[in-house]
Length: 60
Image 1: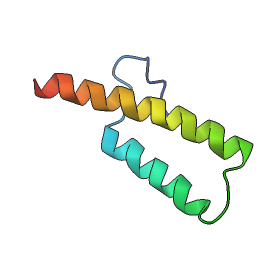
Image 2: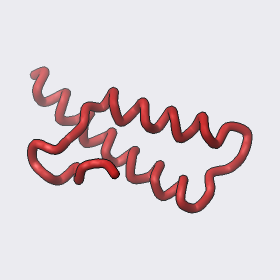
Image 3: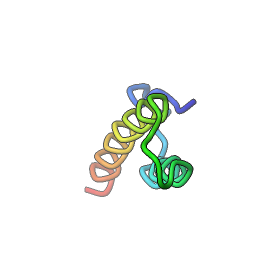
């Protein structure tokens, strides 16, 4: 399971999370997400957005 995005120092990079999103989408290619996949996707999107914001702050 992914680290808790709210925990300091445990955030994965946006690129790493994006790759996991891509893998999830590819695994479900041609069919709708199951309830478990949809829940995982939603968590990953939140994690990705937090990582992306953190990377923007670091770059500034």
